[in-house]
Image: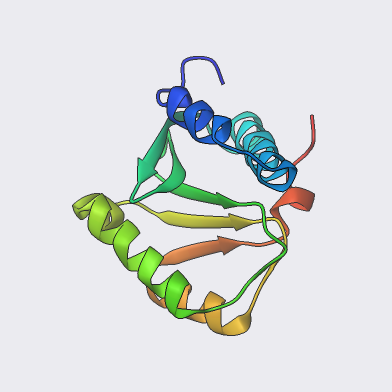
Length: 131
């Protein structure tokens, strides 16, 4: 991902990992970011928006990579999504927002995020070529 702005943000965040599980989380995120960059669209920047690392690609999409097994709709997710949107200012309303999840989405979470304008890509680890 040569030339992508904000790589230092990602590395600084990943460097804070003190447990193996957290380090694996960031490694998985980095791998999927690279696969997205090679196979979907060129990533122009890695951003930290309200504490959420996300990508911006050449097409203007904002992509949140979530290397998790399952996403449920919770008050915490609702609050994070609202903070993300508020911190993005008008960018979130203008951009196409995408959530790429390694695993699956709870139907309520998928419904709520789609209602808010998000495109959901589940099983992302299986959808993108590893090379």
